[in-house]
Length: 153
Image (cartoon, rainbow, N blue to C red):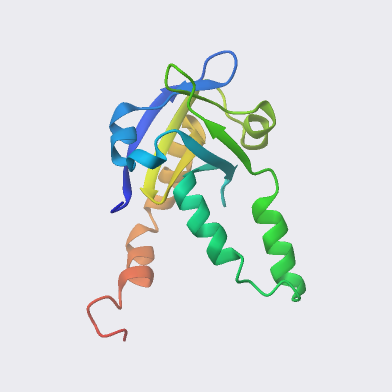
């Protein structure tokens, strides 16, 4: 997989299900199109990992030295609330109510696909976060990308 990409607006039904976008599904490897791991994200969102990507991440995290207190705390916090979810027969994913409440998901939701994950945001929170971050985008780009192509300088 070269990396997921795209923004998708979906609606949650009364049970907390959304129809997984077909364009996004086509970006996944055939083996990763049914089963996912749902976890909290680093901001006010959820992260949905195709199971094959979650397994790669878990393999990397298994190398963390758990004798260090900060490492143990990160490991606990990162995995706290993780839940495996699958597409149902009609191509929907159910978000458990506890996960919805944790990040304030309402009816209108944004799926933000990048790299190995899909972030799940309440639509209004997502656009508020983007709007608040745009003024810092040039500085952020310089800080994150400024040394690319300059031999790491």
